[in-house]
Image 1 (cartoon, one colour):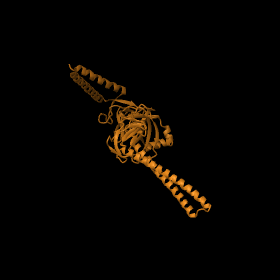
Image 2 (image 1 turned 180 degrees about the vertical axis):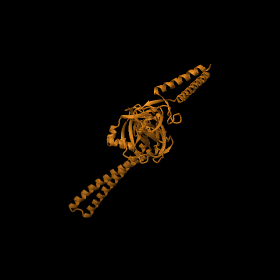
Image 3 (image 1 turned 60 degrees about the horizontal axis):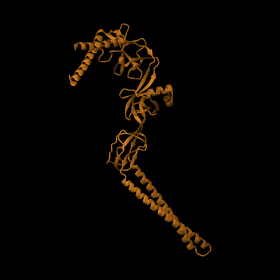
Image 4 (image 1 turned 45 degrees about the horizontal axis):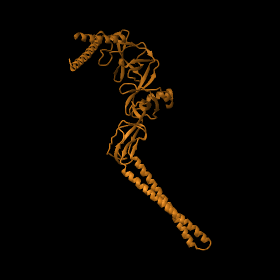
Length: 414
């Protein structure tokens, strides 16, 4: 028998097992319904440890858009998408020929301006000597006022020439600084440690400060910011019971993060901020939890669920699978003393951990409810129907027996 035949036989066997198991489970359900046996739980008050579940979005501590400051063609892309980079690391190189020429021209202009300043200083020194000499001669009545005034005017002109030359030098130096800065901008560097995002521009692309898209984005994901929202009502309750935002933040325990694949992130986070503004569209308030991300498992733009633990004291807790929802109202089947069920409306707390409900009205300790086979569209239960109560353990055993019987029947058929 070759490998292909073995594979086909194996697939057929798995399919047969699945069909038999499903048939057995359906048969058991039909048998259960026929005998009116349903798993029943007696309600008791407890103080369970539960979680508030809040949908959340994940962002890096810094998401920095990298944009060019000068225009030119990209001649080198030094990193790839998803690469880890350090502060100051070169990411892109833009053609720098024009900017190098500008630096050379600016350096020449600075040298020329320096020479002009030196020349003006020399002229000023000569004008000062002439002025001093003419003043002495005037005091001795050797020359007249005209000659002295001429020397004084020459000194003023020399001083003005020095000032003009120095201004030209300052302008040339400023132009040189600008040219060197523009040249440095040809080497686009990372402003922070992080991870490189998508790179829409490649070698040869013409870019400038007005380009529609950034060259890339560098995300600092060593610490991740996880944003989620609570309702205005929940915030008011927290404020009344705890105090202001600072007190509320201090009272929060560490939170967990349930990822998109259903697993719980290995590191706990801390709620660090509460928005001071209520979103008028959603009526909610934004909170932020910080999570360390040393292995870079969390990514900017990801989604998750924040799990905020709390202990509910002396409450009635029932599984969500024991309820039926009709028109935003939740119901359970309450089992009376005569074993007849009553379709009963209940109210639950504004908390949802996807597994249990905290019942605030409609049930009390000692009540009995049906906890299996309740799902709407599948259950044969009807209001006023008499059932045979069994324990949840007995119901689980019956399901297990049905699976085993289905597997045994399949073995006999072989």
